[in-house]
Image (cartoon, rainbow, N blue to C red):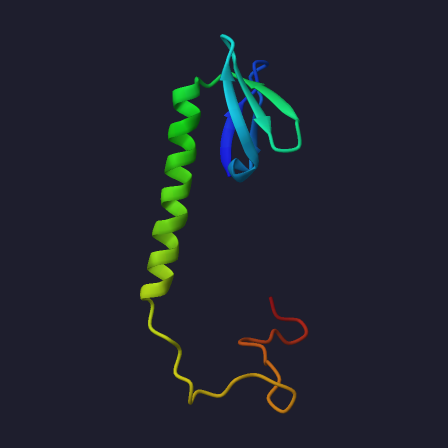
Length: 95
């Protein structure tokens, strides 16, 4: 998701995977794959940079998660016979 600014000054978040094209006319017009259009304050180059940064972050986070150790498969797994339990329970009158 990228944050863009309407010409009125209000910010909104857009799913960059839905962008079909961006036109500079001279305002930037973002057209989504469903035909919806947004006129935004950011330049064409700024929008491209935002999308590149976002996609780079997605790849970096995915690589970080992939580098994490796999949980011990011998550790007990919650299930019907091993329900989850509260870590800390507040009794009545506590808190």
